[in-house]
Length: 404
Image (cartoon, rainbow, N blue to C red):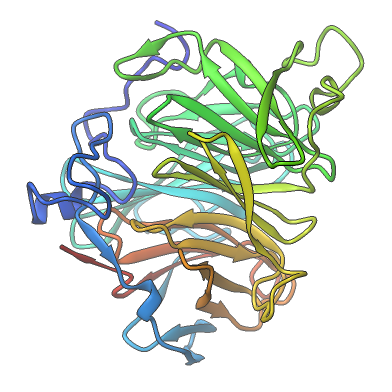
């Protein structure tokens, strides 16, 4: 069996995006897109509608320093160096970064979180039951370094990316039942994040360098309806004056045969200023570049790219230091700030901005790991360094989405 061919434990449903909770509540109904738009695997798109455009103004900070809109409540679910669950031996890791959720067979879910520290980074996990109570905490990846962001794959696995000059990508089982596996075919470079196009079955990757590249990986084979990530072709984007994208093959993804780093192997490719979070939604790859405070949208059908947010050109630039991101069921792009005023801000489909939440008193930190639970009513994220250098992971509950 190939490195990426395994399927996670039966404790996990293989759900898509915001996943099966809403699908169970309203079987047979359509998601936010057309009723015949069905993703691979046993679950269809979630039967949700977004309420994010209607969220009100942020209120005063609560006891945890969270400024939230009316109708939303927050709590701390894990602190660096402390046990999230008393009867578990696992202490929550330092520098929590990229994260994602995965629905479990018992109606609960798992939130995974990278640790962006050198030499002993890895990935931790928090398991919640169907009532939302935290019931377990454990590690799903060890012996890795500077695990920054990554990507949730729709067949129920997590890709954890190392943000180092020769960083690797690891395929992780959120339950921890299977050992994490390295994926050399995805190249060695300063990996930031990954997103899977489940229509064309290709993987997109960002690189956190001032002259980083935008990458695409096409597998040599499919396994159980999804890409086998153990072998394939790695390419970089070349953007022309009309914003059309041409994909050029990287000759040495493992950076073994010569002295040139991966991003320099194709001189005609286009540099992006510090690639950060990335997400696939209905034919579009959204990603951010922190070096120029932009959010991009790549149309996978038209193979064209546009900027949907540019802080330098914005009339009201309430979003700066763009970093991790996720996308709601209906196309709201939620972007975390690295610095700025420590907000999560939504770029709505019409281009307007909406502040979702803010953390006060964490001026030395950044917001990371933003991810919805399967119902779309809980949002997880971290303050990577808190107010005192120690990371904190939060949950905010409220009507981000409603079931149709």
